[in-house]
Image (cartoon, rainbow, N blue to C red; front, side, top):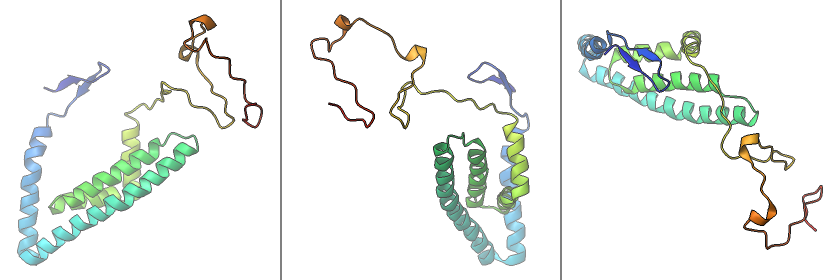
Amino acid sequence: MSNHADRTGTAMRLSPYLPLLLIAWPIAEIAALVWVGGHLGVINTIALVLLAAFGGLVLFRYVGFGLLRRVQAELAGGRMPTGTLLEGFVVLVAGVLLILPGFLSDVLAFLLLFAPLRRLIIAAIATRFVVSTVSPGRARPKEDGVVDLDEDQWESRSSDESPWSDRPPIPPPDRNGNRP
């Protein structure tokens, strides 16, 4: 159970403490809710849990749209938005933790929202992944109208093999893109 192979065939090691954590976390959350409820009262405890959930939903909306704009801006600038995606992912995880009922998840969410700690987590995550870009199957024209194809994306055939061989050739466009 501790070793599984991922898509590339490399071995991944799952923590043997994961099942224990999945059992202990809800128990700790319930204990924290009971403790806070004993000190603040039931109504105030429920109000705090609902306020945190509402904050998580607002965070989802705010960060989601902001992240989308930043990713689009980086892609338009020709940069890979890896850092932006990782930062957005960590903040969205914080939003999920705020939505979950419980005070321990809220504390963890606020720690993730603290920028220096978030950067440390992102740096730790980024060292474990390799980002590579793959060109799409279709080539897109550049701004000047030129389509740049790789060797494996085109082939040369004689004109009599073409399904359009009975049609007259289309003249190339001039510099302004107009055809005669």
